[in-house]
Length: 233
Image 1 (cartoon, rainbow, N blue to C red):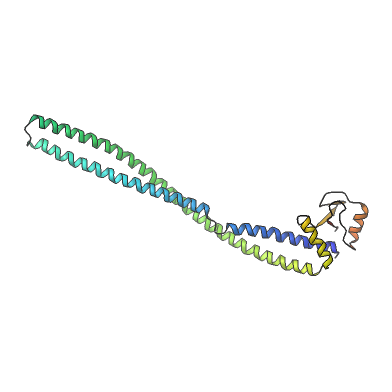
Image 2 (cartoon, one colour):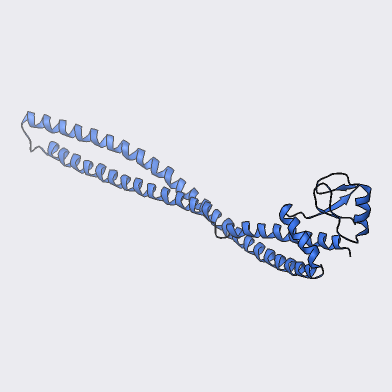
């Protein structure tokens, strides 16, 4: 195996480690993340509190209507039992009864509006409750999937790191030094394949002499344009 091929294989392993490590970092940031779940829970809590307030308003309105009904019944009892003889007092009592009945009608209308709003909000709470159940189920499944992927990626990275050490052990230190310097300078791409007479690193056509030396593989040959190590199958 030529030095260039050894370094090309090492580069493939290094790139795979970088990609998988980046994916692993992103995956770990998603583990335990429950922003969507918190949002749905918050929406449900808000809806429940609003419903509880409306139900309190409904009970208060029901009590108010009931109290007015009792007052009307008492006043009508006075009116019809014959205890009042004075015409003015009778007229005043009738007027009072009419006012109480008008107030009761108004409160009954308010009560009806509140009851309709309660019904709407009960449906909303039920829908948000169902949404939370689905979100919790999906979140749990997603966390389990992410955990499995993390385990698999960690195993892949460990295996690749072992392979990397093995390849580095087969490569001379001088070549490794050139490779590492080029990796830092060339965004991780120190070795470029020669394909159809071109350097895959910079896409420039190579002189025939450079291609022949790269094919021979006796020593490292670099691209005269981009400086990368050239590798030919």
